Length: 538
Image (cartoon, rainbow, N blue to C red):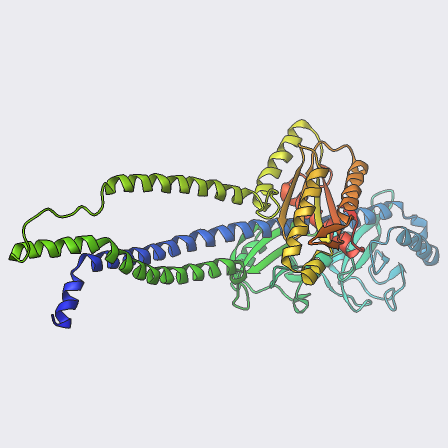
């Protein structure tokens, strides 16, 4: 038979059709899976990261708002207490300012009492060269405090006497009749430690950042990127979400910044200053995991199609071999080269085999589902609840504590020295160490408490029905002592420690995400303070 005729016959064969159908189904399934997975992953990641960005922006905004509120209260208290007789006596007034500033040093560049005519300063502490002789009549904070009689915050700017980025806050000094007799001003450097350092030193992911801007003054107060600090805000029309935020909108969404980079950004207000915190991250970084998964999915579909072709060629030849043999016998009987007779039954009761195989398959699928459900809620290495399970159960325990009026403690535990063990002895020994840590933690908690592994060498412990911080501190110290005891793996003695950050419900926060974030931040305080200890939030 000619090759062309052979190919034509094979092309119309059942084997070819089954193989072609299988390949098409695999490719179509891969394409549909790719499309569906792309939508689900993209929307899910954007929603999850957007919620995290919003939570972070709100946390930073609340922190800054509290710091500004504390400075406002201090200025208002000092304005009420300042002896009016000292307004004509600069040296005693300076001594009075020095005493108050040393007691509560919230203003890094000092306190200044400005004459009501604004032409000079009566006294300041600490003294900055030339500050007393400055004219303040063109300062927005001075005009607002003097004319409105209320607290005011000036436009963040480069200080005329300090020669660095500053923000001025001012309150009027009034006599017994309510008349403004002077203006008390406090100056804080924007780079002052403990003021805006959450913005300047904080990055989100690999390339994300924070930014603080003033809609009123149309200026960027500070940002993670040093080149943006004290720069004008983007012009209208450059950044859609920024324009909405300037008009009062708060929330999260996707926008394109002035450099043409698409970002997922969240906006939160700082009410006391009428400022806005922005937490932003390029969507390319947000969706990087989804992109990698989709590419792997596409490659797996191609590989699956190629494997399927090979498997079907072998399998169908095997399955159709009895049928081909029977067809040859029938053809021989038809042309008379073989006597008529019964064809042998090669396989008996295929339906029964199919049913039995189907039942076996169902049993296997059920077993697989049980295993998958266990993997979805428990860490396969330690057997502890995983991050997903912990994040599902913690809100329930917090809600129960709120209904019962009880207290909870969230302990964020990070192992000290675990990376050294991994690097020195390998991941296998590191895994054994994590399993021993999990057992020790499980032995230290009650049945009503929750301990879970949330990733790497990080564990989360939720203690219910707490008494006070002293008792929780004792538990934390006990855990540190327990985890610091020697471990033995493959005959080798290992030593690690633990840093624990603690946040209390309801003292420190009411929301689950905030509690965990505060405990995480407190843990890093321990890391920075020398490790192998504990620290309460706040």
